[in-house]
Amino acid sequence: GAGVSQSPRYKVAKRGQDVALRCDPISGHVSLFWYQQALGQGPEFLTYFQNEAQLDKSGLPSDRFFAERPEGSVSTLKIQRTQQEDSAVYLCASSLVSGSQETQYFGPGTRLLVL
Amino acid sequence: DQQVKQNSPSLSVQEGRISILNCDYTNSMFDYFLWYKKYPAEGPTFLISISSIKDKNEDGRFTVFLNKSAKHLSLHIVPSQPGDSAVYFCATKDTTSGTFKYIFGTGTRLKVLA
Image (cartoon, rainbow over all chains, first blue to last red; front, side, top):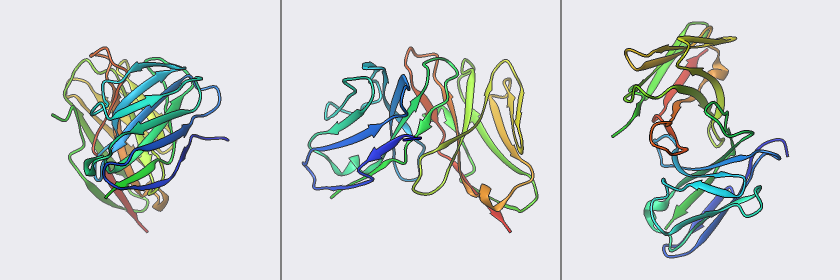
């Protein structure tokens, strides 16, 4: 497709359930970012991939959060044993190159609600 | 502690007038700044950026000004149009901590009145 796509768009999970969120970046984009956006806040960085390598996971809030990009294209963010505080919009972004002045293209996000 | 601050949560402007959105940052080492626009139920869309070697960058109706000494940047939209109504985020790449993270402000909701 022409842009970054994410699925599902909406996810309702019961507390304690595991969830997996998918991101399809723009074809050929090297860099891939995951962000968490709480209501009324800006996106908060979670993790960064350059191709298949996860170069930065400093923003992951706990070891319940795990991300992968095994073939350097599609990425999955997995949240184990979800908690109510995990409720947020999860945004994925990709960029063509990795560098100091890259431009990120965002997907529409997955809205996660944990009950 | 917020390293990128947008102190105005909302702004209303009449169509055709200038919209000025402000952003402050705390770390003088930050050297690349971006503005994003976000419509409801969509991801942020890149609008314009500026490097610290410049103090102004212009793209059509959008101009970003950077005041390094004040650690302040602003986005000017002239003339404002109803389609500009959205949430605007400023962001910077944190090149100081050895990470790849981008830091976003909390956003300013702009409403352009017809």
